[in-house]
Length: 496
Image (cartoon, rainbow, N blue to C red; front, top):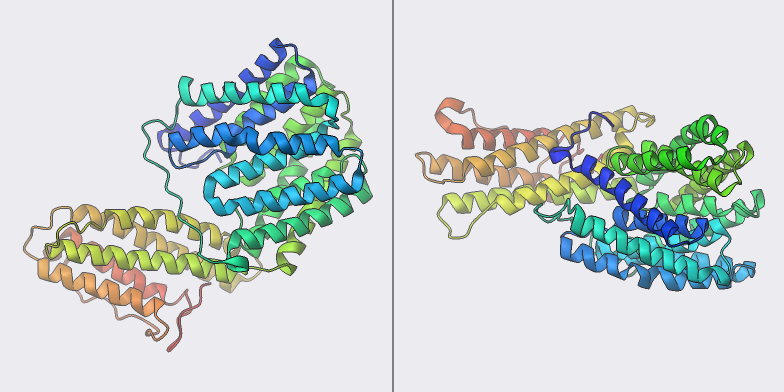
């Protein structure tokens, strides 16, 4: 967590801004005379606005932030009205889960609105909200979103001036072939099971099981990713409960130190989210313990119950992803690896076209896309390289595939830089090398491709120049990639 790269200190600045935004939102609620539950709701709204809104550019982020009340307020009212009607309340919660996950088909904005809707329902269970509480909650959430927006877009616009964050589109599909549709059914089944089993353990705190099942499905697509995320969430909760027993319980809700530690937890959530889900869950669990202390209901038994409910939610999520419209880890990592290889092919084609003098030929966009696709492929392969994966052969193949894909990304990036000026004395050799790279990709991705790719022709790097050297390194990496991808003659290679 502490050694992970942070270019431009972006994670650090984002975490510090979150502390300021959430703290300012809660302070504004308190200064307006709102109740403590309303202030907590406002703080949660500010945290979600700063955490979940991840559109590619700042104008889109402003629009999504402005739309959050449209997703959260109706759900908040529905949950409050149904608070004492158990069956209807539970059915509405599961329906909210389904709609919240289904909304991911509309990209980052759909995901942010879906999360905000779910958490609006969740917070009513946490605070036992009834209709009489709605005006205060609406006021707190509105105020918090305004404050968070001011901090994010006016006082500390960290994203301003940064290039738009391009997110690779998910695999295409219609109906149940669309990943968001499959996940909507999986998450609904998981949360329904978690709700039923969680209520068997506690009639008052069952919602922690539902919340666990929901968050495990965020940013996962395959069985393996879900298993790893469930394990990490449970591990982070176990450590968080232990820290809560040592820190939050002795404080017993003392306002000043509890508020200071909540700020530390908010910083931890934002700073660790990108590099360690377990550390993030540790921060979340400690923060929840402190909030329970501020509400005057914290005791060791409550923390133990949270641990149990977290385990219930994790198990229900795993069962749902295995039994309901499963998407295998193999299918997911195969899809992302194939897309990355096709991107290498496109980069080589554009490079050859540039060297041949084709107007407008530019491999740079393909190199940028390859960076994103490799990041997604790394996520898909993460379950296979996890330390607890017992299949050593598959783990070794996955490690080799990641190393060679990383080589491909590095060589394509360097190739784009080296061929920025196509003038030179070895255009013919460069073009021929580009065609060999394309043939190597086709051998890995075409059903009738060869099991292996011939190695590059020996060329003196001093004579070939930098560009030709990068092309030969890229060809070598593709040649070696046939082994961990399990290419077999006459068939498309299988991913690890």
